[in-house]
Length: 451
Ligand SMILES: Cc1ncc(COP(=O)(O)O)c(C=O)c1O
Image 1 (spheres, rainbow, N blue to C red):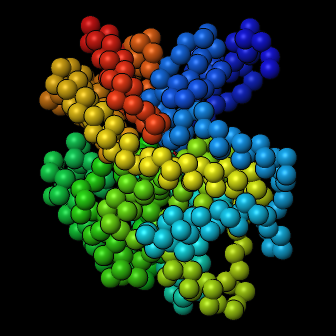
Image 2: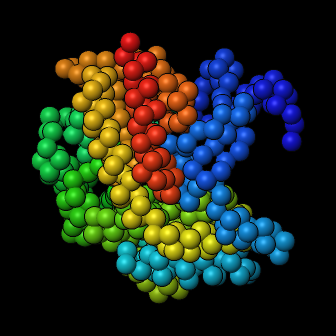
Image 3: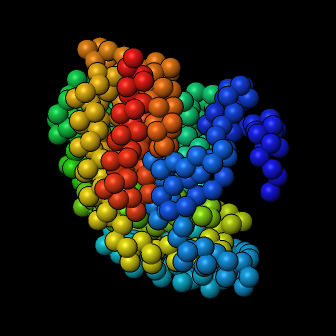
């Protein structure tokens, strides 16, 4: 590895970073993260930071999970790669398919399709949904419905169902036939509904209205996150997802649960669908499936979809979709080990307990600092929305948000900013003391931003 002078000198000089402006990165190069240990990361200057971001919602087991590291090393020595396209497969892939069928059985999932990450999983699910209807004798069902503020990755399909302008405008025109419903965002919504149940009912009615307008027989699927993550941690009322499921059932529309963040325990339940008692038709997973140690994802497939594909004998049923790294043996071995550790350590229980403490602490900060307009959370996905004026809810300035970030960093905690939101998604192995450390650091940041 090059020395730190070399790295600092060349930082952001010859590379464009994802989700960042190239000019801004050149002017303000990003933090160079050198190491990770347990729940902490260490920057190039040797500062130790409690990682309030958990990598990127994915390092659920922390940075020192030896069983996953060992599984990766052993598999690299045994078989570092082979294709899983028609005709060949590998041991870890088969083992993982069995483990996932078992893990997701309560969600009604019976088959898996492997990918290289979340955007790939979303793209796969959207495509399989269309193909399902073609096989099922309803080829006109091609449209997709989604929620504003939803985030579904950056491929053209995913970007088209995304509900945030930032990921759409520069890349338009996107896929035709996408319909966006209001987000379950009580703090701001077009219905002026601050009651979560009232807002959920409005969204369900909006869905019914769009179905009537477009014709149910033109709609392939509804895609939604059980808890909206990147859009600012928006937690819907418990009735929303079950009611949307019921409408989908009534009208023959598939339900795709985008669980790239919520699968594997982050919300305090084993999956986001299980959190709300819903069985989707397709489920997108990635991120924590390998604890972030290897790029990997899985689309889980429910029996209704699986039965139609498996009963088909035409050429249309062949899956003309897949990735060079679908079912990568190293990723699959990592996922097998990761799933076992996740279950052994009962991560959802800790996510629920620590998440409740974190949310209560954020509420306290909201009581102390007018800069905090809203706080939201479920399990260990939480957000603090910063405003410059609580009455008209105008978003806090970039400068104020930056001061909260910097204050927290200087106090030893890495947090993530997204617009005027501070997003928290630490590892799921944090302790009560770690929660206190996050809250103290945030308070240090809020103090600086409030001066
Ligand atoms: C809900 C959801 N779907 C899809 C994605 C895209 O995943 P990836 O960045 O691995 O492509 C993300 C990433 O954050 C996500 O949160």
